[in-house]
Figure 1 (cartoon, one colour):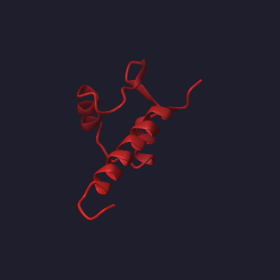
Figure 2 (tube, rainbow, N blue to C red; figure 1 turned 180 degrees about the horizontal axis):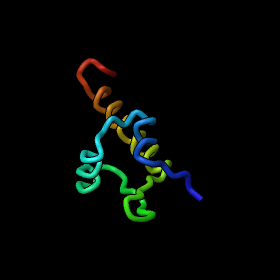
Figure 3 (cartoon, one colour; figure 1 turned 60 degrees about the vertical axis):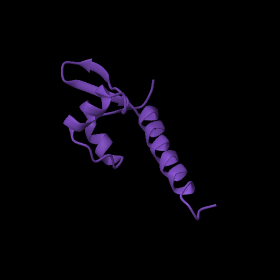
Figure 4 (cartoon, rainbow, N blue to C red; figure 1 turned 60 degrees about the horizontal axis):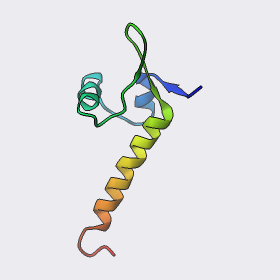
Length: 71
């Protein structure tokens, strides 16, 4: 069974987005979609959130490395 996260757990992972912004990102395919467990009950798979955060870090590191003067 995967570890599941509630919206408040996203905040605990330093994801500062509002529910509305998370919904926009999901709709755009830019944030992992939650699993719907019931009416008004959504949970995210922790490993998918961790992967998303790792991808953001990798993109940042790549952008920093490609700046002139960084070798």
